[in-house]
Each structure stands twice: as structure tokens, then as C-alpha cells.
Amino acid sequence: MAKIVGCITTTHVPSIGGAIAKNLQHDPYWSPFFDGFTPVHAWLKKVKPDVAVVIYNDHGLNFFLDKMPTFAVGAAAQYRHADEGWGIPIVPPFKGDLDLSWQIINTLVEKEFDIVTCQEMLVDHAFTIPMSLLYPGGESPPLRTVPICVNTVQFPIPSARRCYKLGEAIGSAIESWDSDARVVVLGTGGLSHQLDGERAGFMNKPFDLQFIDSLISQPDWATQYSSTELVELVGSQGVELLNWLAARATMSGKVRKVHSNYHIPISNTASGLMAIEPAH
Amino acid sequence: MALEKPYKDVPGTTVFDAELARKGYHLNQFCMSLMKAENREKFKADQRGYLDQWPMSEEQKQGVLTRDYNRMIAAGGNIYFLSKIFSSDGQSFEQAASSMTGMSAPEYRQMMLTGGRTVEGNRYLSEIKGGKLKTNAIVEKK
Image (spheres, each protein chain N blue to C red):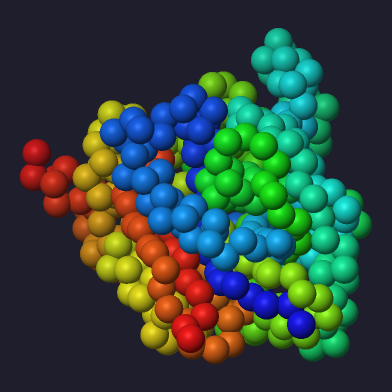
């Protein structure tokens, strides 16, 4: 059966794409963020995942308000990035993994998640930037991918509890997949930030740090909050932490922290990074 | 049944809900058109004429023409789609966000570099004194 080698959760702020393109990794503004990835690069070299399942939210590249699925799973042989209208450099396409895509789709529907399946799917910066951060150098990452998109754009958004259960179901799909593949699960977005209104710039460091800790000690801790409470606590776009929660929930056993990093600010956002692996 | 909106109690915050998604559909659709370089050029060349291609309200069009993002959000714009307007203008997310706060871009940047906007005093409407949101202790001391 396939094995989940770990889970990486990271911020996906679009301006990171610009910083990479301009080689600003060692700039004083950016280095506290980029330096956080060095231990994760070493860990990835050690655990060598074959496939990444990426849980993220699209920001108007693949999905617009004409069709806005709560949960969508990619089932394509290849995923392309495209012009998001944000001046982010376009990166080369990513390889899909059709077998794992359909394994996840079949399992999720069996577990009563009424998802949308996408045999064509563009992936936006919330997918591409984490990939560029984890596999720097500008070439296509050396692994196959399955994108899973969660609506955090249009309310009502799925509850934290629902996203946690989604993650559990994705985890069981991976672990019952008849394959010897090594799978890493990514959750992207957050942490606390608000991009709009008079409250723009809102951040909540105590909450973010407690959330990061909870992912090791009590992973369902954040499921106590309603969507409204999350907006209050982490900002209207900070609700992207749902992707972290779903990614973490894919790992059913005890876990240990490989590395974490937290830095304020990247643009309008409190940036977070965490890598965890099964505790043996 | 009216839509329950408990999030109305979060100050200075507009949650993009079903009502706004309906109201703002064409405004957001116009924004999506700016993902094509050729459309960005057409928009820049004749903003009013370009906007008139969508069945948007005059309020929405004026919001766009004056680049008043709070006005666009009140009229159903979603920040992720509206961002395609300020990106076309060569503005960053940080600059655009600052324009919604009543702070200057350097003041806003200073707030972000010193830890962002504080939690306390900014979570509930009842906490807001004198109609203004708090920045943070370091900025307010200055």
C-alpha cells in the first residue's frame, strides 16, 4: 500500500513568486522567510516523495463564481499554471497521477463527500508557489501531483470540522491505494491575514502559534471554531488555514515535527511553515 | 428566510457571502477578463468604454474608475478578483490593502513591519472606540 511520508503546510503569498523571480531570497525582508525552508529541503531529499497531494484554494484562475465547488479534485495527466493577471511568472506544467486522483475521488464519494472532479484544471499560485519553495531551481518538481481545491473564497465556506474530515478521508484513500508510492501531503495558505477593508493588515500571532502547536498535540483543536469565529480570529483571508487542517488530518497516527517557521510579515500576511512526519 | 450574518460584528470587514456574490457577479467577471494581457491593454486605453461592456451598476463602475476598493467591495467585489485591477495598475497587494484602511502606504507598511494590526480592540464592533480601528502599540506610540 502507498505510504504518507509526511505533511508540509506553508503560506502561498503571491509576492513570493515575484521574489523568487528577482532572486531576493537573501534580501533582509525575505531571508527570514526563505531560510525557513532549508531544513525542509533536506528532509525532502531524505524521504523522497513520489507524489504530492496538494490541498489549497484557487483564487480565480481555474474557478470563478460561475462554478464554485466546495471541494474539487484534479484528475488530469498534467496541470498547467497560467497568467493570473497578477504579474506572477508562469511556471512549467506539473505531472499528474491519474491512479491516485481516481483513488481519492472514489474514496471521497464513498465516504459521502460530493466532490467535483476535474479532468482539466489550471493550478494557481496557491499550488505553484509552495512547489517552487519546496523544489527551488525553476524546473518541474521531480514528483507527480494531485491538486485538491477547497473553497475559501465565497461564503458559506466548508467548516473547519468538515475540512478535517475531508483530510481524514483523503488520508484513508492514500493509505488504501494499491501502490508502493511515497506520498507527501501539502496544505497551503494562511496564516492570519486580512487583505481587505479597514481592518486590512490584521494578524493574530498568539492564535497562529497555538494553531501550529495544536497540529502536533491535538490536531482537531481548530475544529471548535465556526467560520465566523475564524474570520474574527485570523482575518477574512486567514481562513485558508482550513487547508492546513485538512492536510494535517490525512495523517492518522502519532506525528512529530520535522521543522516549523513563523515570520511576520510577508506582504499582508503572517507566514507559516511546518513539516511533520509519522512518529515511529 | 433572511441570511444570518453573524460576521457583521467583525469591524472593518466584509465577508464575501451569497448576497455579495450575487450582487457582484458582473463586477467580478469584468475583473477576471483582466487575466488576459490584451484585455488589460484595452481597459487601460478606454476604461469607461471597457467597463460598459458588462451589465454593472453605475456604483460599481464608479468604484472601479475611482479605484475605491472599499466601495467596490460594498458593491459585491471580491478582493481576489479585484486584485486583478490593482495588479493591472502595477500596484502591490500591500499598496492596495493600505488604500482601504485610511492609512498612507508608508504608514501601513510600518504597521506590517512591526507585527501587523493588533488583535485586541479589532475583533468586535463593540470594541471600536471613536469609529477607528487600532493599528498596533508600536505605531500608536509614535
